[in-house]
Image 1 (cartoon, rainbow, N blue to C red):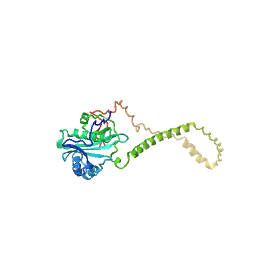
Image 2: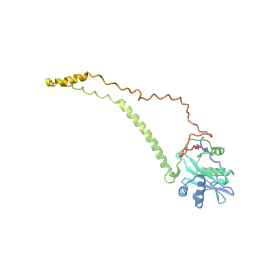
Image 3: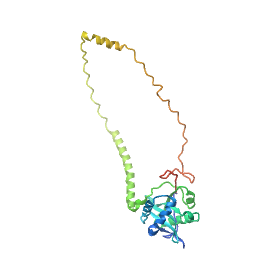
Image 4: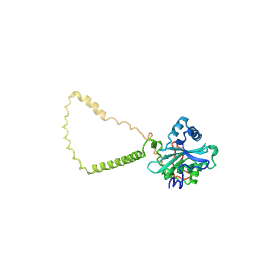
Length: 273
């Protein structure tokens, strides 16, 4: 099992109590700036970039969900599609700093689960840097990374995204098949004929030397009897062989609630659930 399946048994379209409820941000654009400020208390970003990201909220996903108590903004979470499945990815989960530890985080996540189930999702995924025990207490388990579609789903049909994904996979398979066929074809080709023998070299014509060349011959012959030059020793310039490396006991890190092999784009450890 990965993430959290069977996200809820019975949920209304909008989870609510007499005072607390979950609503999509794109149904309450009047909360846009307050939501941006809430997110920036946890993750600093320019207000312009934050507002632009929040304005992507729609029924076509990603959907930004806000937790309200009366008309007061309490928390936020964003839901996106996961490519190739009936799963959703939850991110940017935050509760007001002065209201943490009072159960609002659980209410927010239960509202997200009900929202996702009402729209046909059967499993939720998320990542966290340090709240893995909180999510485990809510029923989430460790998982492997998944592909979050993000804002692509808002302007590109999911069928097209699936097709692009399958095309990339098929291209990789096709390259492997073509390489295999080329190798098999080269093994079945008949051997190429051997080239014809090279013609014999022309006979050497040694010109007769006149007596005037005797002095040059004597110089040449004397040069052939010169002592050979001293050989240079390169022993000192050759580096010594590298010492043998110790046997490695490295083993891949398995993800647990205590450690994880995964990192986020900034290189910080992150847990997939």
